[in-house]
Picture (cartoon, rainbow, N blue to C red):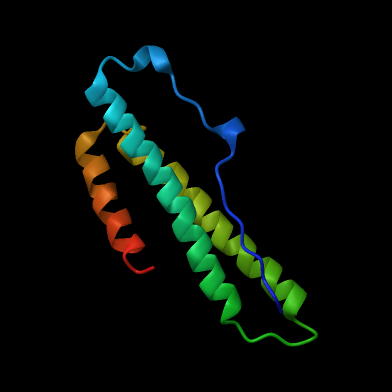
Length: 111
């Protein structure tokens, strides 16, 4: 089986309330928070790629197994994106943001 993995940002789900950006520091924090979403997306792609490439497939199970695994991984990381926003209050809780920054840095270092 030959897989082709693609990831990216959905512009229709990406937005910024520019009137809430008061200064360069807030702009920097917002950019850092949004980079976290990109990092989660990258981790999803890499983890999904590793998981899907390393499963044992048969002629009779490959379609169902690929679909099941892809949906499971996608849900996990979609939930992670939601949890990231909730816990960091969309980047405004700086303590929680630092915790996530450290976690994502550690996860990225695996790849």
